[in-house]
Length: 98
Image (cartoon, rainbow, N blue to C red; front, top):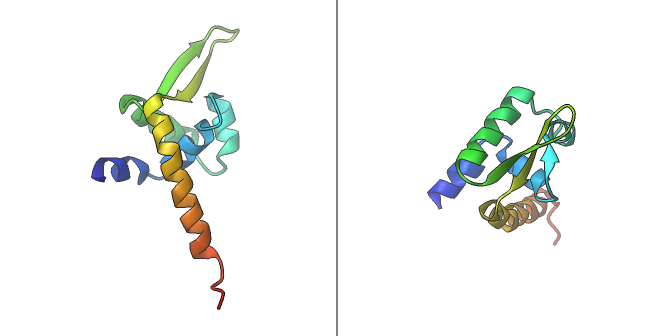
């Protein structure tokens, strides 16, 4: 549990994984889809996720060349975990009903 929480506990990491859960994205798309994240932080998060085997980085032959990021099979396993956290968080934010 500790290794998973250490990975997901990093600022912005769950957001990056969540955005990639919908399919591969280019860097610019991720910047637009995650308001508030800086290019530097996004680069750092993607590098860490790639080094852990959570994200695949693929160079797309285009002009100019671009890079697409996608979740690996291991990364896909994190999606239900993040989904559960989102559902519980939503319940925690809802007003209590008596």
